[in-house]
Image (cartoon, one colour):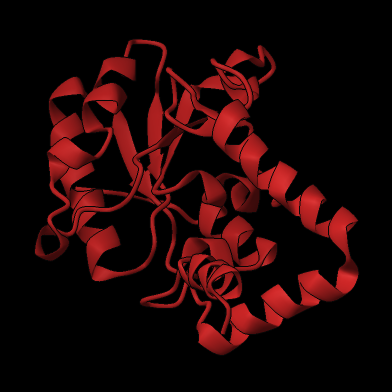
Length: 196
């Protein structure tokens, strides 16, 4: 394989769930489509790098700082929903049942992978807790890492007196939040339970 093609295949393989054969299909598809589609994709990827930033309030990724949710006065500032990644916010928004604000941790605790509390945005979450915040909803993956992170948040926020709840277990064990349908997420939001 030519060096340019091989490099393109290797770059696609860096994406989650993309192996060599899928990467090759992507590369050859782009070549068949011609320059316009390839350049449009390249432009979109470049815009991700140059125009997307971290919200200084909730730590989500978006085009503005602070983000649109943090600046929306119609959102319920007494509720903060904690998610692992920005990609999980649209899943919760799609339910139409949540009108509060968010906080993005940037991952889940996983000591085996070297991800401890210092690698996530717990300190930023703690700074956001004020008398106006009545409840923190922990909406993390139903996994060992998600449960460990939820317990850590519960213990971290206990001295503040804020109510800390988690989603009801309508989510499958080991399931990823961003793969659940909006009905399941909605039921989980409605049936959330208080963490210890």
